[in-house]
Length: 481
Image 1 (cartoon, one colour):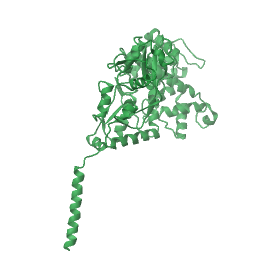
Image 2: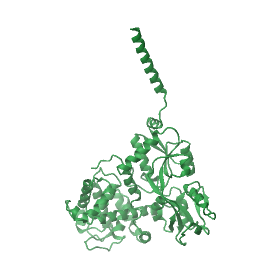
Image 3: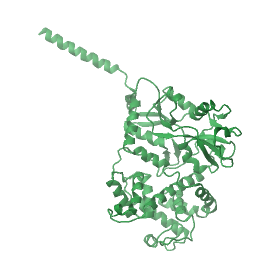
Image 4: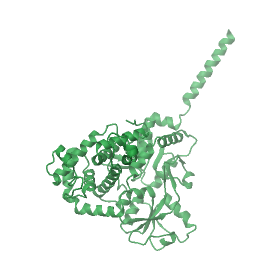
């Protein structure tokens, strides 16, 4: 009996000792983040990463970080260092949990920090002023001023290139970011600079004097960075997160949101639009603003639709019977009470009312900005054909609440194999896709024109608004319907 009691006491002591040890065992980083309820994230203000609009925050990194925080069940604290160099230093010293700032994964940086799996690939591109002859090789840069942002991957690349091109030289700038240097280039104050391909893809439309010469790097991965230490808990969770959003196409949807429409307009269309902003828009801007205020929409979105429809002209019509600045059909005019479609005020107000009605018809389960893009597509092709495309999307295992998925199926409405399966039959489904993407481009350009008074400031794109405010981060578990 005594031996049995002694054995039980020994077991109890061992259990208590184990419990005490566990109580004092430090938590891993992931659990520490969950316990404090805040994810600390280093980022930078840039159109490719994070920026603030009057209605809220936006940017690819902003959306990704918020998705990750939602996964962990915590809030986000964004930290904006004064320079990119400082941002890199802070993550190497563990001053934050993650650096999500469009960071290129280079060999030198991998020695100082831990990178998660890439979510995007870019190339570094040499930019030049359109007045000058296009450089074809690095030796062509000897007679001009090349300026780079200090301590970036661009300076690393040129340092490596200098070994085989000893005459290569450049200036470094520790005050401006890449956006600032692109502004200087557009103004003709420097001759060359370098940009990541994703950045110039977003802002090239806003700088008519900036041209791309050639790539100066192979494709390079973009990834989140973490400090190097023995605790891999947060690193492992980040990798699981990116694996999940790649698998369920949430990453594709985010990339399409920010980059899917950026190449719709060629240089001629871009220049023509800029000219019409100066020569035609002032006549109608107050009408767009009045209509937008009444129906709680962004007047620049309405103006973008008006431009796509008529190039801001009232005396236009088509063979299908639509006419006026918003190109309204007679049936629609009768429905919403427009007496004179040639009257700019009536046309703009009526078109706005019709668009608002289309937005309200889209399921509230469809997140923004997809809901608005669907409404604009319905404005063009009709709600019935849009619904056909959404049903086709569902049949093909796509997400009928995502514009990225539905715009792939809309053109199928031209093909008998597919439109024969729908309720409403044939439609020129490729046209609403082009229609929406053009409007997105015009909308971006109007925002740039009206909000960016001084592109030299580092947050020149901060004022680019979302559609609509807030609630713009995608969920990785968004239901299909």
